[in-house]
Length: 155
Image (cartoon, rainbow, N blue to C red; front, side, top):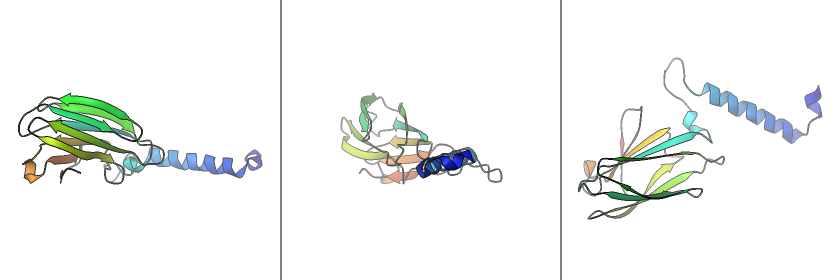
C-alpha cells in the first residue's frame, strides 16, 4: 500500500481532515429532528453578529467591537437600526468579540458579543436597550431561527 510509506504525522493529518469533513457534511441537519446540530461547535464556522440599537432614550449608539484577531472600528447606529458583521471562528476555537458601547445619556459599557463556549449560534442577534431595558436587563440575545431569548447585564 502506497499510503503506508508516508510519515505517521501525514497519516494523522489526513485522517483528521477526513474526520473534520465528515462531521461538517453530516452535521448540517438531523433527518429525524429537522434541526441543525453540532455545526456551530466546529472551528472555522462562519458567524454573523447583528446588533440592534433599541436604546430606551432613542439616541444614536456608538459601538466599537474587536477581538484578538480583528478590530472593527467605531460605528454609529441610529435608533432601531442594525449593525451586522461576519467572521469565522479561529482554528483554535478561542474567538471572542467584545464591544464598547456609548450613547448620550446612556453611559459607557462593555459586553461580550460572541464567545465560542457560550454562543452556539450561526446568526447571533443582540438588542441593546440600555439601563431600565427589557426585564430590567440592558441586553437581550437570541439565536435567529431558535425560540427563546436570554437577558444579559453589561460585562
